[in-house]
Image (cartoon, rainbow, N blue to C red; front, side, top):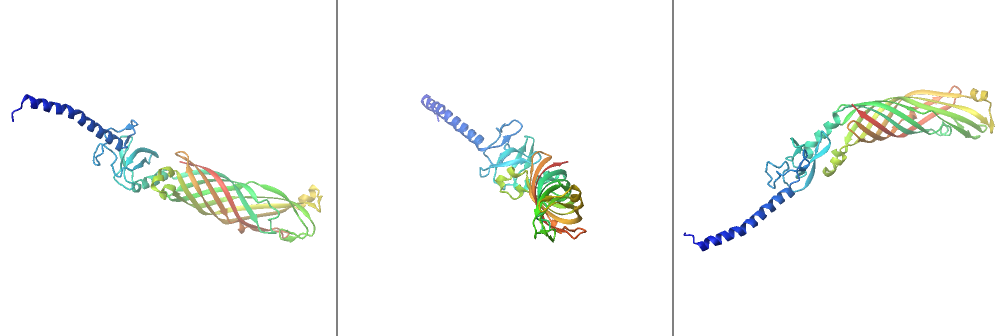
Length: 333
């Protein structure tokens, strides 16, 4: 077809009008591409310009599925290294780690890495301080000895897997003393009082223990969206035995309100001492503050009812179960 000057002018005018429209559409698509992809180039800290809406575009580390943000964590460093737009269970989520590598970051693939991170330092040392509430049977020490005592513990542990290990420890209580007045007709260590007497008592508990320890990371049972935020928390539990020594003594300090001389007080001294192997159970939580440092809070139960002590003059002390609360610090190596 022969081109006339008039037709050339029309074509040129249409081209001038279409150019800005096409450029605007291209810019709009480019902006959509940038907005739709949340890949972060961690090395530079800026949005990766290579992201594209196309699900199969190799320039984008994140596959575009469901347009739902999820956290991809570098388990070795325990921090978020990219934001993936991916379905929660997509195993094809390829996270760029510092812009130089890729890592599978689905829940199924990340779980073994989380567990192995906690297992990389299997030996740890710790110390705790707590309050032990120890009780005695009625008439066999409950109206004589003080119930609360401070308890200090040190221990060493070794993990054989991310979920369980062994812990060895030593515990000792402070030596606590108290004064008590037991009236006529009341029981004093299994014997009825004929008169009102005042007593001064003290006791101390210490010994070794060995425990089977269990560990359950919070993010193993938390919803997917909360796993990153609970990765440093663990439930802990222990079942074990302790070889303990309980030593207690009592002195008469007054009779019917009249104080005894020092010599008479010393002469009335009654001593109890016994070694027993008892059961113990511990349960609590543990939080990792730093790479190698954690804190632990737990409750402790010990079967002190196994202590049953009789003095040479027939007085009896009978223990009951003890319950304690402890707070400790742990260092892994």
